[in-house]
Image (cartoon, rainbow, N blue to C red; front, side, top):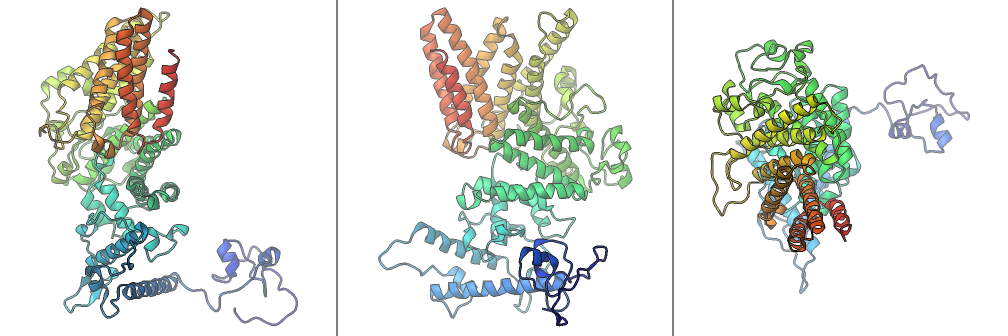
Length: 635
């Protein structure tokens, strides 16, 4: 406590208009982040709250001093834990590197170790092994710390072990109770889970090497905390380990808080878009549909305000000036005139082809989430339709991140949503096979257009002109779906595009499986408004439903285990159940009980497929309950 004059009475509080000297506030007010009057021997806040009022001795410590003290404290804890580990393993005379290679010695006499104790011992071994794999020495054999080298070895962060580090065994205790990042081992483990998860939509746009290398950079070149916490969130979610999944609310709250910070300071806004997509995807997967729709809506509107919906060329011209790339509406940073009125379009211009490609890929990821999220929630999407020329989506279909990195893209690759409905364009422009993400967003666009068109079906009271326009658009959309379906690659395709054919032993490609499902679902949605008055439309819905059922029956346990789009399949299969139940009612009305029994078996098969989603998508129980109610109403 600083020296004070001995006096019986309380020093009067300083004027509220007088700023306190830095560090003059008492420790209680600092901790509670309250305005302190620095009264002696007790401030007014502590007197009122009956707190123990204490002051830091001497001048307040700088941030650098506090950080150094924290580092020293952590190093002391690490040394203490290493000594304890050495004493348990009977290796007091060896260093930590020899410990990491020696087999564990802590085996109870005659008793089997508990699973938790085995896991903790394994986690400790992995921690020591990874720590040593990241250690770098100079030519004299001196071990360098992380602050003494500025390069990065991506291989050091690859999944080298299937073991999960035990959160409770990490030296940095109770990090989740503070605002600190996870310890290095947990951070790397969660990132590895996120990057290695197959079949997720974010496989397409993320450059693994660039992301990993950026982890060791300083702001603004490192990922924004919003993105890092979103990655941790998805890593915990996909780990299926209770020790990690219980931290999902923590990372979700942190990611949302940092999103607001990113917007408030216009800091790394591209990371803001990526983080928003990750959070929305998580919310949809966990059944928080309204929150997911709200999250996607904000990201979609922001993408449009940045002009990402009108990138006309995939090619990057390194000879163009930054002002041309950031302001003008021509290739290589090709956006509409809308962005000319907002120089820089809020996002900094891309520095190379990879960054340009990532903008294209992130826009289409946002589009995918927006349109399918709108379908699942039955709420309107946020991205613009094709009517308004200023807001019409004109961004070129996406290619792979590798093609953008190598520059294997050109203006000859240009095609976008409106070209899906133009048979003349498709006939004249012989483009390369579409990428997996290109197929996914095109199927999404067709499904969304079919769903929207069916909702606008004119009733008998509408004018003849409205009905004529509807049938014209109906024919156009149906033909577009048929053309797209005819060019799809095989279901067991093993490549990143449609040019590599799989065989009977290849696993089902999850993205192509999703595309097939969306195509048949688009047929169902398009013809659903006509089933009461058109036999061909009735038959089309029934035929497409059975195609979806046939696809679902191809899925095996490993397909369900690696699935990431459960929310879409739950929605699609529920729609198919509605078609089958309607057909079953028609058969019962006609007295055709034999075929009705066959339809009942088909319903049971679809319900079983939906039940298979339950381990990773418990929200499916809600749809299963609705289907059970529909079926029971028939009896």
